Amino acid sequence: MFKFVFALFILLPLAELYLLIEVGSGIGGLSTIALCLLTAALGGILVRHQGMRTLVQARELMNQGQPPAEQMLHGIMIAMSGVLLFIPGFLTDFIGFVLLIPMVRDYLSRWIISAQLSKQRKGGQVIIDAEVIDPNKHHLP
Image (cartoon, rainbow, N blue to C red; front, side, top):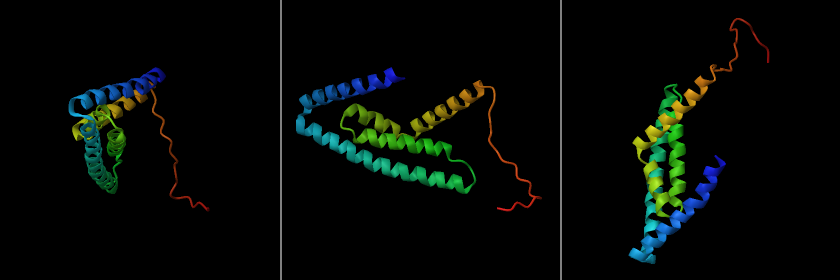
């Protein structure tokens, strides 16, 4: 895992730099900067809109007594998308915009949840921490 993160921190900025140079040589430096600012602004608007929609869905589920696990994962992915969209570069913008697609987030959140469930099942036991309260006993604080 460390090697992956290390490679990501080395390779991603190099790829971004290469793409910025290539696009800049094709459309010009100021146009490239304007395009980066435009994607950041558009991304910010989309992140805000989708984040609010996800928050409303989570509240509706909680009002119905259901856990908003999938909406929480959507919220994390939307926040990651916002960070990626504000980082200057076209590769991070692409990944950020892909994370804003609800179908992609649905697929990823289901994959994460199923991976966690299968990890729990491999252990053979699921431990549930609970407290039993006898309603017939009167407890003093």
